[in-house]
Image (cartoon, rainbow, N blue to C red; front, side, top):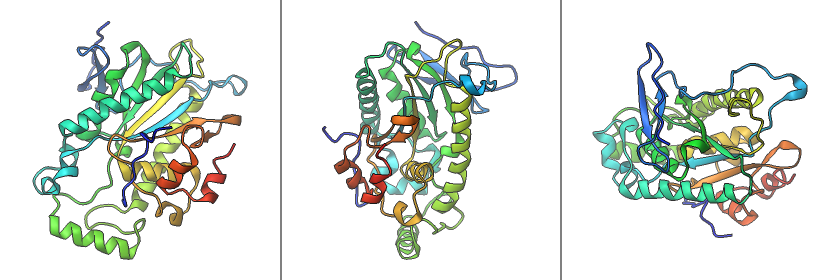
Length: 302
């Protein structure tokens, strides 16, 4: 298998009406360029989703086939760190290369899903509210017809680690050097967050996600398809922390992980017994390159 998913470093038309009293924004997407998805500022996309009632214990909706973690495409900050001194981190946009990376990622996701040869597959998106992640989703989603997109939620808990407000380049380099001495997980940037802080909010998101899975939020009305695919568009550190929390990895194990490349993805696929495994899609070699140890790989074998 070609290694497109992980890159490591030493580091038709539909416009849904806005809800009353809630200002909304739109993300252009889908194969047809004039189609768009509406995101309400309360974080919930205005899609005709299934009513959120508890399912009887003997009639739980099927779990999504995959949870696909996508890092945003190349951003202005990835090529020029000085932009952090004059542009707020949440407002940093993608480069043209980053947009192309996102579009290519969408094509790879669709290709992977179509290999299942299922007719009823759909995708459901969670996205960080930062500009670069929203632009990544906008370009990624062009690989899908509107009818294939079950819904979308903007999720603030998926935002980037907070490094403080406007960032002085030399000071940030010094702080990152100190972080390596102090420990990547526990070091807190001045006026910002540590990875441990990100872990706490990602834990809250994980509980929301599990509840969404249990109540069938992703299932269109009247459907019980096992071929739903969740796509989480976020940031490198946030996604590594998500994996740490999901698989209960230790701090030491987390600190051995590498970042995935811009526009890269990690795929958690439903295995035997309904548990999600990284080995269903990735090879052992890919995962070792990402930073998984033999012990961590053994836990993926089911």
